[in-house]
Image (cartoon, rainbow, N blue to C red):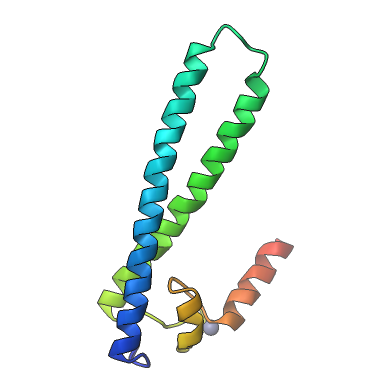
Length: 126
Ligand SMILES: [Zn+2]
C-alpha cells in the first residue's frame, strides 16, 4: 500500500515539504519578533489610548496570520511523518491513491479532490 508513487516522486514531494516547512518556520519566527516589538511599542504608549482599537485589530490580524501558519506547519510536518511511515498519498476518507499531480500542488493533502470538496461543502453548510 502507498506505493503508487515512484521513489523519484516521493523524493520530490519530500523536498517540497521540507522547503515549505523551512519557509513557515522562518515566517513564524519573523512574526513572533514583530509581535514582540509591537507589544513593546504598546507598552511605551500605554497612557495614550486614542489608537487602542486600531492596535487591537492589528494584533488580532497578526495572531490570525500566525495561527494559519502554525496550522499549515502542522500539516506539513504530519505529511513528512506520513511520507517516512509509508502511509503517504492515501486518501483519509476513501482510501484511494491521491494522484501525484494533486500531491505536487499540495504535498500535505490528506484527501483526494473528491473527498476534499465534499468536506468543504459539508463545512460550508454546517
Ligand atoms: Zn477520497
